[in-house]
Each structure stands twice: as C-alpha cells, then as structure tokens.
Image (cartoon, rainbow, N blue to C red; front, side, top):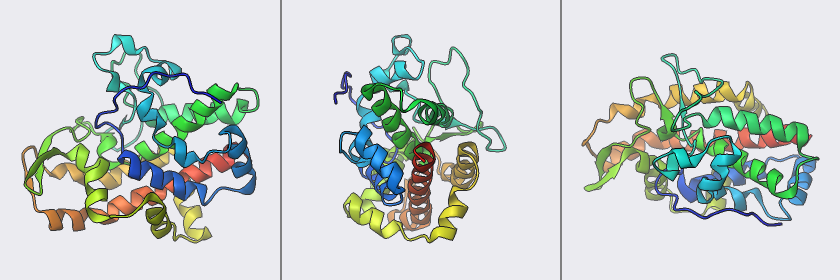
Length: 267
C-alpha cells in the first residue's frame, strides 16, 4: 500500500508534536474493540495507527486538496486546518467559511471524514481510506491541544512570543512539545500506559456527546492559557505545575475519544 504525496516541512504547527500524537494514538489503540482493531490492521496493511499519527503534518500540501482546499491560493503551506475557531460561548462552528485562506476548523473536517469513512470505508480505494483514517487520528489529537483553539478575543493559536527557561519561544511551541518534553522524559508507550487509567464508567463519561461537544469542552478548559501575554517571562516550575494537569487530561481524553470514534466507524 502506498501513499502518493509530497513531503513538506511541518514547521511548528503540529499539535503535541510527534510524542503527543503518538501518545494519543497509543491510548486509542489500547482501547479499540477487536473488530475495530481487525479492520484497522487490514486497512493499514498491518501497521499501527501510531505509525500514521503524524502523517498529516508530513503531507500537508496534498491532503489540503483532499479536504477541499486549494493550497495554491495560500501564502504558506501550513494553512492546513490543525486549529479550530469558537464563538464567545466556546461553541464550535459546524462549517467553515468558503474562501477562507486558512481553514480554521479541524473539528468540522474531522466530523466530515468520520461520516465519510463510516459510510463508505468498504468502498474506498486503499490510499483514500488510509488518508481518511490518518486524518481522523491526527485531527482528534489536534482538537485537544490547548494552543490550537482560536477565540474571538485571541485568534493567534498561541503564535506569540514568551520566554521559558530564559529562552525565546512561543506559547504554541510550549504546548506542542515544550511542556511534554520538559515534564515527561518518557517514550510514547510509557506515557500512554501512565495516562490510560480510566475505568469503563469514566471512559463512557469522557466519550459522551458529539465531536462538537468535545471541541467546546476543550475550548472552555484551555481558555486560560492566553492569560499569558506577549513577551512574558514564565517561571518554569510554576508554569509547568500549573498546566501539567490540563496537558495530561487533554491527551487522555483525545485518546479515549479517538478510540470511541474508530470503534463506532468499524462496529
């Protein structure tokens, strides 16, 4: 099975970076039903969903077209929809505006791909189906990253300068990798094992509702991160300790919700 795509530089737009996305996918994999696992093994040619967790970062240019956007109209290829916008009440739009240069609604596009895969996965060709699975795996991670949510009063997705450990970075980069890398020196399998601790009742509570409910919940939980202002110097331990619970909660929820989505598609 082959993917025909142009590899592009992914920059700093990828939520959670490789470690976070792999952790989300591993948690999901550990909670798949036997039927979903069998289907995915078949459709991914024996590879784990973890293998494809960051592919949407590597193949932006081609996969933009796959979700209905012509990247030739954009100034930069990273205009791919890793983020999503919410209103003042943190509600996620169930569409995106035609003509937008930057598709800021990964929740909407994930919902579209989920419906498409659920309805047509048996009829898709190998490449089309693999791309749909990989996009869903990636977008479920993206939508739970606090710095990938755009608010009416802060549309930056964390792309503003802060200082951490006396080094210049951005709030976006801290949430993509900095906090995970600084606090948790583990492999993705270790991290997934440490986070995958919920019982069936807790998982049922986390996975209740729709993908739009999950997006709104993420937006409400994450809004406070923008209390940090442009140029602020963060105290490492205080900032890390204040945000580690949100980090772990979002990764855990993303993993369980990804599993719920895939189990429903392939039930």
